[in-house]
Image (tube, rainbow, N blue to C red; front, side, top):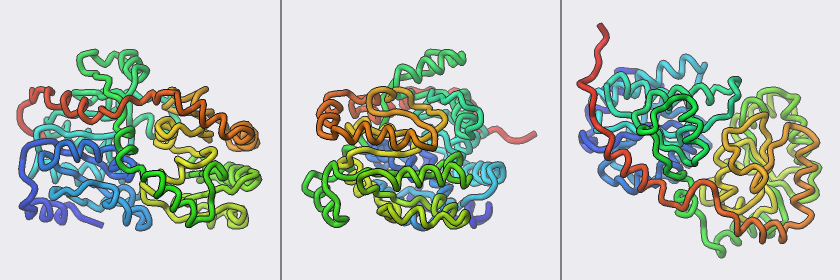
Length: 387
């Protein structure tokens, strides 16, 4: 675990990290994937502050592989822990980086603890803040992410809303229109960059003994589904009953819960994999008959890959795909019922979905965000010090 002194020494001794440009703060693999198009666009004009919020080795070993090369990569190693403690440590760690290398503007993505910490640290340093993926709302106050995204949006100098619905959410909360721009979502270009060509996708399937449209792909990691043995057992039982093989990349959080609750036998009918590198995961998702997930990012990716997704959640901040690419269900029998509906005519559904546009834009989100971020005025004065 890095201490404040360790972080200060590491940042101060980094000759590659010059002032100026954008500073991108992130802490999870999905954030890095979605910010990768901006990193490519900015090139040497940006720094990356990686907090290390996702600290499991099986995930971390793939994080840098998913990211474009960067000489200015500040790795803080904050790690996990209680939410409040993690937030405090992350704010302090990011603050240390910004004190030495502030950059012109701070960019955060999404709704994680790292995103909120980056927003608060930017505010403390009087740096302009850009929120990528702004305006998403589940209206579910039991979700920590909902609180994070609302706070970040109201701190931000620029809210980059992926869709018009997200813009309406912001306006309803009295965020001024001049602080909002509809950009699309960078997931579109991130996905197209990482998606392997058809021949390579075929090889990924062959290595697992799978055939196109002949299996389901499932992921599970949210606390509402995996931190309680009841919902977790219900979901795993439904997956095990599907009439096609179910490929199940096992998230570290889920793996720990399966062990803790003694549910290992429920994994036996599934094709359990270790967490996949992003291109390999996309290869599996693109060729699956149906996706089953509680991931927010996979809901977006399904609309780009033109695959149906069964969203196992009590609420979602991405209602744009409802009734087209996705359907939301609770843990339990509806998982199997909805899967059966999609599986009864896989070819027909694939043909129908291929003509539906993704609600998340045309793959130009990074350019729109960069242009908007470049026009954010540096209107504050100096770094605020505690009095």
